Image (cartoon, rainbow, N blue to C red):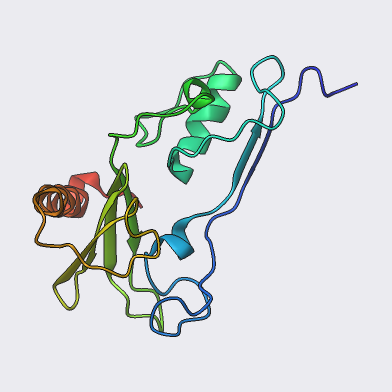
Length: 173
């Protein structure tokens, strides 16, 4: 008897690499889409239509605001994510989505990424190298189009996000 008034949200936190880039066969090694793309299932009674698939990219940061929205509760402080309840038919494709792979123990990676629509830019901060991809034309992220005008704009946006998030007053515990 719970199905009529219970929302169900199931999410995974990452995809998996199967050798597509540099022979890597595990996760937490890059920010290519094969490792970032993950599943998110949302069932909201009265809102969800069974079998509906939305291809718009969203972020895991959006799950908590979605749950709060369903519970008609407010976040205790400003949050970076936003509720996905308005996205059941598709989300704003122009919203930038950021990802980061920060140094952790034996893993020295320091990589940041921004995706807006089908355009992505990946910044290896340690090596100071950039890659850009047009996912519509190149879903496997093989052709670096870093010289394109779209890539330049996203590169600037990514640098600004990294600079903003590195400021002491913007860091959490």
